[in-house]
Amino acid sequence: MRVRSVHGDLVEDEADDPAQRMQWLGEVAGLQESLRHIAGKKQQAGRLRAQADRGEDGVTALG
Image (cartoon, rainbow, N blue to C red; front, top):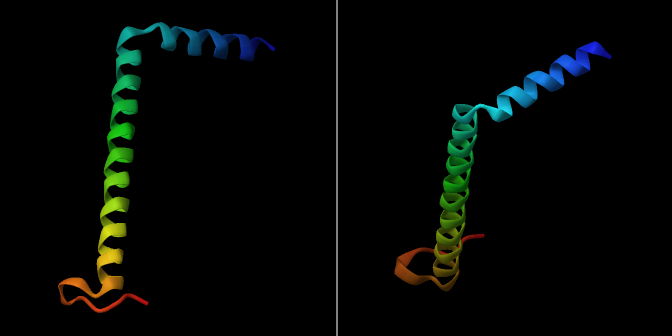
């Protein structure tokens, strides 16, 4: 039981550390940017597939 208490204290101390919070915010911002990039790539892939399906730009239809 004491181990849980000590672990809880350590986790709480880390959460109170401003530098640790800023690092977490940076990690979150990086993940959000990655998700935006992935969403853009999915849209681009959808547009390219639609163009290929229509045979635009000399690209043969994808199967």
